[in-house]
Length: 338
Image 1: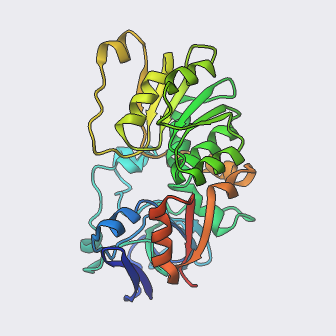
Image 2: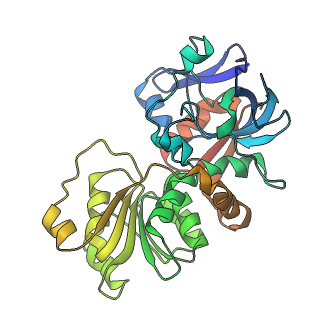
């Protein structure tokens, strides 16, 4: 099979790899749609990798034993390592599994798993079925495309009565707009990249502000009757955006951090949390129990296709990673067989 890899600094390509074999309740999935996430960061710095990607949708083509899915099922791949037995896995929050399976030990292969490939193994219990009428491309958005922000809004209970601030309108932030608008919320976006500014406006947000704008905090308060937003969600992953989320949220509001950030944010316990009464939440993904709800968003939202900016052949992975690194895009989906 063909698999996309990073070969060096800003250099990617396809290599031939053995097709993995199903084992126990891990089945073989033929990949048809593979969304890109943050792999461009490794591409830019030259971190060689043959395990790119963690999202995708495809067709079950081989099983080792009866396991809850059948050959021909169209499925979303929701991860490759959770144990399926611990408390977190059993209650649907498998992303927090504390007993993750070592892929190499389990399969007996030195090859790491990755979604930028024509085939991939997946645990049957983490392969929810794609409803009839939903394309592989749309179905693949049920993981990082919509998942983190969907989970965040489930946690904070965002409603049509709320105004939400979203910092960062990259692929995750655009998914946040889809989810927020599906719930009827009023959306304010903070973004500086012109392509993403224009795309957010196309999606019908109330306002798009430049993070470097002088007086941005006062501008947000002017847009919210002087109070601040009811909820803020950071999808940018930097302390400036995180601090704005805290400062722009009204007293007794909620702030949720979705984007990974390697730098330290100074949270001031007294003014930020005690006296302001903020609820500050970290959200990685959503519960598997809510898969039917995220599929409802995918089936019914008129904005989903605006969150997907490009569908490209995996044979053009070099161009796709360059585009992803340019930030002039939303979610990019690779087609492994093209």
